[in-house]
Amino acid sequence: MFHQHASHHPSPPPTRVLTPADYGWDPERELSFAPSRADGLVPGRVVRAERGLCDVVAETGPVRAAPVAPAANGDRLTPCTGDWVAVRPATASDSATVAEVLERRTAVVRSTASRTSHGQVLAANVDTVAVTVPLADPLRHGRIERMLALAWNSGATPVVVLTKADLSADPVSAASEVATVAPGVEVLVTSAATGEGMNVLAAALAGTVVLLGSSGSGKSTLGNRLLGEDLLATGAVRGSDGKGRHTTAWRELLPLPRGGVLLDTPGLRGVGLHEADEGLDQVFAEITELAGDCRFADCAHAAEPGCAVLAAVEDGRLAGRRLDSYHRLLRENAHAASRTDARLRAEMNRQDKQGARLRRAIKQSPNFKA
Image (cartoon, rainbow, N blue to C red):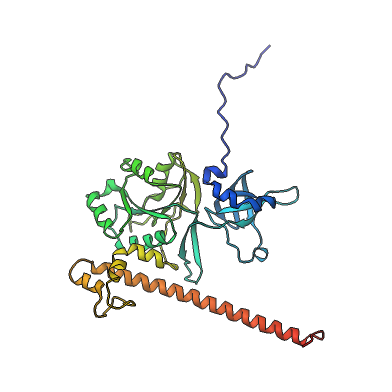
């Protein structure tokens, strides 16, 4: 009679279920969450949001949840990747829902592609913004300044990561050049292909890290190096124009081996500024400092007498290109702000008209008493 023997191969260890603590949940948030717990809600973090659904790592385990309907949601935030949320667990009759988006400590926001007055949140609750710049291509100072304005304005700490150093003739000189347009920002030289600079980069990144850069800048390849395995899709750069394919189609949050979490984003072809005043002050810190010595407090640094900024351009202390870039980004930011102001005025007018109609209706009611 044939007897089947049990296998002597050890079974693989069970995969540990990740919890909000693995994604950065801390005592301060726990303390502020007490009222929500009393309402039967549990905390979680959105690791991916698409098509009106959120993948959330919740205290009770991973769940796919839908945000509450906009009509019931009022003016609350729409959840995005990186958000901390209050989840109402599933019941026998109802699916799990995201009842509320908790207050964001930081947020990377750009103007929408449609150039409306609303901003698009690319990532929430980020601690470090890693701006990726490929050394295989000519350096584009204006784009670096634009991305850094976005990063500084988020409230997180920016880091410039020069990628593909193995394809550069002189990465050290490139790093020095980038440093001139990134005051106060650490500039790191890396190569995912050779491993150059990866340990230094991993040590420099803290908390929740978002990778921002154009298509083909090497974000996903860099992310896979940091993650220690190929979890992010990568693709070749087109030889015709040097641009990469959009291998990352969504924003996703993944835990890093050394602690913290990584958020990869689709390549950004257009980066419009949205209410980025503070970010611009940081990116152009030397201009902001020089402006303090201008004769007029409201100096526009264009043709005014006694302008310390123009004087610095004339004697070579400030590059004219930097001032031109500053003016260009200021104009764009002011235009975005004007669209927001116009929208707010329109909403106030609409509310005033609705209020007037309501008052007329009340006065015309047969039960109205003056």
